[in-house]
Image (cartoon, rainbow, N blue to C red; front, side, top):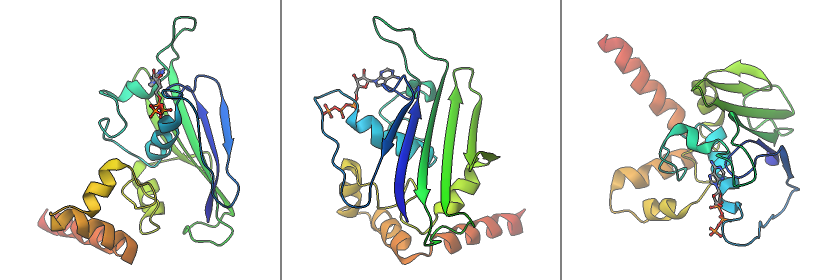
Length: 183
Ligand code: ATP
């Protein structure tokens, strides 16, 4: 399984439809300060369901929508898709290629899609659970993540190990069922 492609439109500095192809192996993104390199990893985390605007380096949800420049008007929506090669069936879904999309309109209307079919955020979280790819997985290592691994708080460290061990799914289900039982 690997990330084949990232498609952006109206996301942060990527006003125009932009497609980034990733080949197997290592890809390095280089460019001047402020040219949008970090916006690329922000987009990946956003598609995976990141809700924390702080970690997306914004204040409110609509800060991910292209805000305009001196010469260009702002846009009304942001859309990002990640396309994953799933020919090894690591993702529990019967498709060789999986496209996950998130869309947000300035009005606040929002949507998640798996292979163009509308879905819930929960479906996306479950799809990537225990693969290491989810927004809390260890495949996106930002500065804060390194702190988490080195953290003195055992809860922070445990989360990383649990994801790697593939047991997050069971822990999440346990919490869900306990809540239901309580109700
Ligand atoms: P550095 O090398 O300094 O870390 P970078 O290449 O990682 O920089 P980013 O932080 O990804 O750059 O991009 C910052 C740029 O994105 C800024 O120019 C900022 O104005 C622009 N930007 C962020 N959000 C929006 C938005 N909603 N609309 C338009 N532009 C945006």
